[in-house]
Length: 290
Image (tube, rainbow, N blue to C red; front, side, top):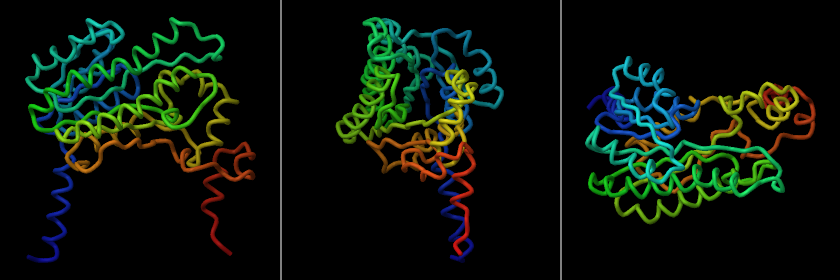
């Protein structure tokens, strides 16, 4: 075999291992920025897409866009804080598509408030959606994945999966628990070839964070803490999710992976972080040695 053939073979194999043809993916919270980007990315890789949000009206544009690109797609309305809706979602997807290979637990909610102001209703609402729903959905999809001989569960956490952030205590609690849920399911279900991982977005520009990014002081605070000096996008998260959903990630399970522009790698030096110029970090890193 020629050296050129040796190079082409692995490249073609790598491309094939990133494809999701013949697989069905359920994405919760698909009406949000991150969920929508994930749905488009998985559809583009060849998966049939089951979209979930509270109402199908919120998914009409997204469903049309995915369908126009040639992917099979359907929308399923379900309030994941309602037990009956939650438990009926997976059977509906199976009835529509006949199988379910990939679950992306993306639905979530955050209330920004001081811990002393958190009421029982706030606590229950966040934990029901951010933690109980992913737990129950994972239980419900597992028998189908066992039948198929493989599966992927991808949980969308946050930086608070591994670190604290003031003002969002209950949200942080739910995301930290999601990290542990990821590890527990990964070790229990590895025997069935069900791989379970968690993606931890950093400071992204999303529908939920528009108000935060519009505040110049908050924007500077975030940008100074991101080594890459800018906020991320839903597509940044979606590309990693697509990889974790694919055969190419077949030896990765139980991992919590940040998509954060470098935040979790550490803090910038004082001269950079104090500059008030988000691009300072990039310039400092790019200086050539004398």
